[in-house]
Image (cartoon, rainbow, N blue to C red):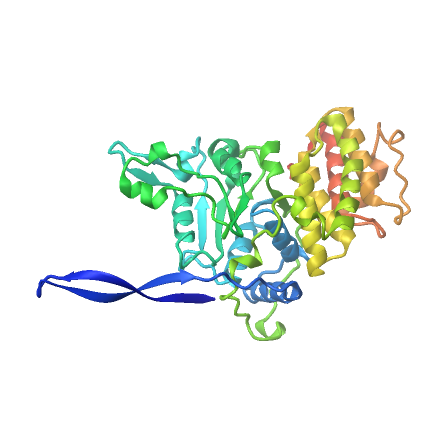
Length: 431
């Protein structure tokens, strides 16, 4: 919604008449946008899914909902998997459905270069003349914080993010992302650009006070192979990792006539559709106490297992998982067990790697949690320490045994156990 302050008097010198004239100047201001009603979210996501299918792409069930909830919980998401599975395309199509395109500047693809070694490659640097030369991400941030743009969603896709070491060139972004706080009902962060880099008054006006705008959402795509770098826990703590390794090649494009309804027009949807409603657990605890306690109790049991290999999580991960679960409950997108399955897969399993017997013990303990009691599969950790093939072979050829409590996490754990048996080493990131 837009608003205008009607007229502000300004005295302007008329050079030809050498007289002073009073001319009206319209000062543009943007009023606060209307929040999106929770009941509308499923319909909006369905429209986004329909838009994506009209473009000839099909993603697995609830992937769009999961992608949305992950961005809502934290504006930094990593899409991982083998090459050619549609990671970059998902970002582009999702943004496009919301009216964010390359043409209007609201969608930006930034290919990461292998030689990026410090934040200057992404944020910018001070040249020999003393002028600040902005990096690709800085230019987007400047545009996104303009008064006429502050309520439009902006998407940045860092393509092949781990061709360079993420901790080197993205370190400033990760640190500033953690300084988010509420100021006058807006999410603001500390400044990204040091004042020492802004040597001119023009630079100070344009780039001074520039943080990460609340209407910007960051998505990185990664391929895990011998040419790429692994992620540290510092990165994993601050992002949700969506995996694209399980592909059904027999998914065919739907004809436009098979997608009922008219194409959605979501161009006027403001950034509050994606902006986080909670920054700290205290923001949500009073209204969602029972769900927070249930989710935390699950994490306490999982943390007991992870402590053996020093992979346990802290408050940051706990809060992010709780926020995801709260949004899912508010919008009624998935049942609670399915939502927690996504979080176990995306926030817990990426932390696990190694070759020691303790890693095997943790994987088996997590497998017991993921299978639950409804599948009739006994997981005796001690009996399976020497050979777990009788367990993980149940997932051979991509099969999922019926009745498993958290099927996606169980399938990934089966794969990790098999790699540990066959290769002597395992990791979430091995494809």
